[in-house]
Length: 470
Image 1 (cartoon, rainbow, N blue to C red):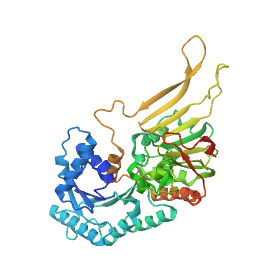
Image 2: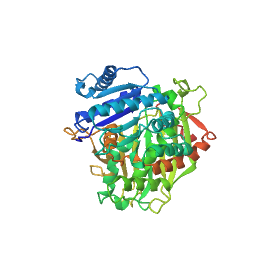
Image 3: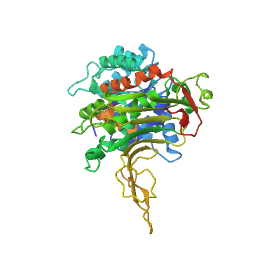
């Protein structure tokens, strides 16, 4: 546990993200004793809260998350403070800066500062500009001892920009404020236990890595299926759509992890460079693109009655390098689908089969990394069915990350990204180069988006009908 004081500033602290995700993650980190001994959580938002009202707001969020279980967050919420301000107002940032400086002076030392932008992406440019002009990115208030220099870091939610040009502009603006090692762009799916285990599974075992190429793999499927519809997020989602919401970030990062070369060392820089090289070599087959919208979407609250926003997309990509040339990567995501499933499935080429003549099933081994609704790794293989006749049947060998985990509960994604940002470990965060390459892939699709048919599909289905598929 660090002895240096830490200040975590949450921009948009009264919004859904803090209420539903961040408050609980910070409480869990506190309960596990991994936060610095001296820390403060400073909420910054427009609501006229006092410190005590903000603490009550946090307690209520934790009580909702606990579903009636008794929790004791009093000691935790004593670390919370509140500063009212308008995200659009330069004076509010100057006032926040004066407040933080006063807190540092009271403690007699300059605290490390982590700024978390829990705000809509369309406000990033404003927040970055105001941060720069106000001097908030400077860690130390004048007159404080600087024997041990403090740091400032910024946590940014996805999506980062709406297209390649806007993402580049935001990066330029962010680069004026922070160095690359200070910037933490969140893709919370990278922080899932099963996602990280792709690296260990591939490069720490001799079983699959020799087979990890075009010679043995027929195709790879990456999916992000959601059972829920847009619910209360209609006004936000209608300006984003499925491709920007999860395609530009989650699905491309999943593709990069499963396809990257061995980084040789478990350090952030080589791992992020290995992911970026995959993205740089990824190409989309534009003839394979399918977009859809579930029936009833136009009636959702906050959605334009003539909206052309997609709630579903699928496409085929390829990676132009010696390992993967010719192997299709099938990406798909949609809302209001039949079952929730976030996974990567690797389909191996069928081996010559010593099979009975009556065996008509497709004879393939499939390795699946599942991230939701449960986190596990499974292998589909074939074995003889018990009995007198020689018949084959599929069997499944699986490893679940939650089994046997009692004493050391698996940290959720936001716990991990918050703690890694505090520790300065960027492994689970997208680099500037990765974001640039992701938008290079997605922007040409967006430019053709309006010219592609928008197919309707029923809620609870598998998406648009087979006849609509390229």
